[in-house]
Length: 430
Ligand SMILES: *Cc1c(COP(=O)(O)O)cnc(C)c1O
Image (cartoon, rainbow, N blue to C red; front, side):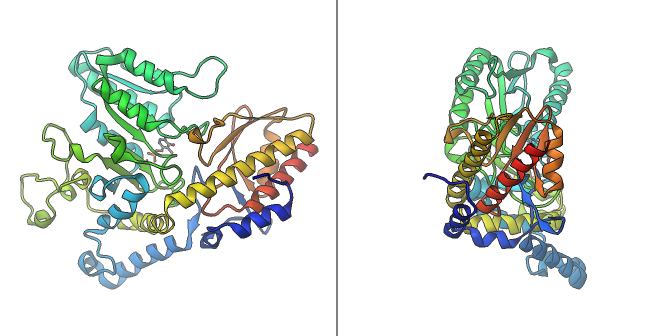
């Protein structure tokens, strides 16, 4: 499609947008009385009206029923988590028994590592990406330290980062696979962010999973920036485990609950360690208060505590919305709106001689999703402040990278046009 940088053209794309009605389901902050242009759904998604209704329902049931709500609430609390299995499995390409919702993301990755990072003296290495999200780096370091002394390996050698090549912004698939083969027998675990939080690079999870398992390692994915954003086939790819937060593209609210996946091939493996709690115990017998742990079949056998239903409510509203739409439609709009945003950026770049916008997100459609990370050469942080003061919510990373995620659920094409106009004014003013 050949794009035009005009309001009329953007409005026409909005008219043709099958998902346009969903924009009204979300609550946009206002700056100077005007609804913002929101590009940070990759950091905290907007609140939906349905999320608020779902939370209100739990609050009302709690008030009206108190303890009886566990069994007699509109959506009973004692098995509230099971409502996620079907819709969430469709979003991540899993079987319903393979997914669950509990805790928060880094906590769940630690718990998954209890099961899937079982180092020995000769097989203890972890492969991750260079400059992984800081929480993941601290997690790897603390896991390695936790085991190193007991088992007797050197923690300094345990974490192997796959690096970018000199002068390149993204990590090459061939370099990930080569590193996996190089570490070979010593490799215990591969755990990478499915979509890089900084560049927006989407990794080839299928190929990397197969490569890691071929040398005898477990392969897990941190899907914080992938869930609700890219097509996932966790079951088909044979991924061992995965976890994700729900507050980025899935709009469940600040710091909210995490989803996780354990492949069915592991559900009956008695040799896997796990940290247990009563909510992972046999459902029929949970309230008999028995002393011997008998896990529920499937991912929910990794559950630990009584359910934080108030945290689950907005996420349930969200997964139901995603199921209603389906990932293919979201991905179709995602591709179009991201391409339109990139077009607008290039148009403005051409108009203004003093700038050079360098998109560091990979150019190929297979390796990118919602997010564009852009070096704004020739500009400094004043531009960021100008954008924020004028109702464009973006994310700034030093020295001068802007991360922008047009979210297909609630961003409009006219937003992209309007953003371009504000950007142009901001650059000419500074
Ligand atoms: C956002 C994000 C996290 C956040 O983890 P929390 O435990 O929810 O704070 C972790 N890893 C990656 C890759 C992220 O993008």
